Length: 99
Image (cartoon, rainbow, N blue to C red):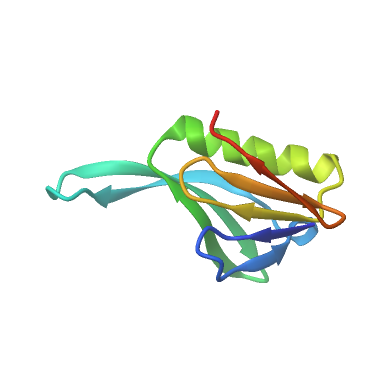
């Protein structure tokens, strides 16, 4: 299964990726720090941020959806904005909604 990052720039094989859910601090429009939750991976010594969300529940939902998609035989998972995710199986695409 392939995982395509939120910005579409990263396309990685799930079988070779070790995904983690982490967080970073970022400044909002008023320069106030806020947590952003990220789906991260490391392959061949390189670190990648696949997606970033402002809500932990949304990040958890996407993280679990990736795991379930793999075990249900998906061929591609495209990470979207907020809590959207597109899952393709054998040429068919499904668009998952928000939790």
